[in-house]
Image (tube, rainbow, N blue to C red; front, side, top):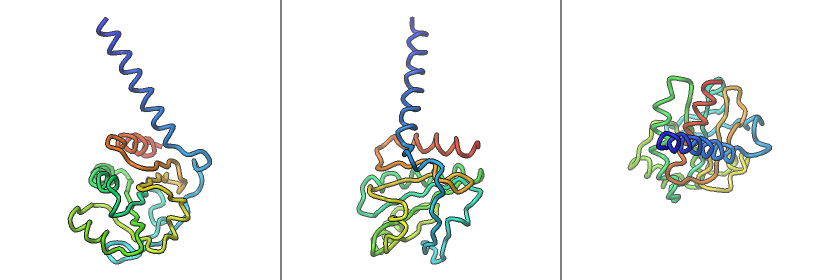
Length: 169
């Protein structure tokens, strides 16, 4: 009886994970080319998305005033560190007009991935960002494969599964 219960629970957990992954994929976005962009990074250099062709890229749109953004940033940094050697990178795109608050936050909560500044919302508009945070996963061929809006604790497991899946392709 206990073994059957455990098997049922594993099946339910798998079904829930599949449902969460399916809900993270936005119809009409899957396999569409990711718009290329060039933005100034926190290092002062310009960074271009197309320079990362051949890698799996997680683009995370965030703002310093966004509580969920602050919660997920250390988790994205861990994800970046864990899979960087396998051809994965995180690009954090700050969407505020004045990047001073973002730079202050980065001093308090440093991350290991590049942070870019979209002060005039050009890139945010290209990606139809309407929720904070918004996360887009781009495959090695430069196609958008997943879009996830918002963040709640535990949802990093969705990113992890998506990243692993795209790295294996």
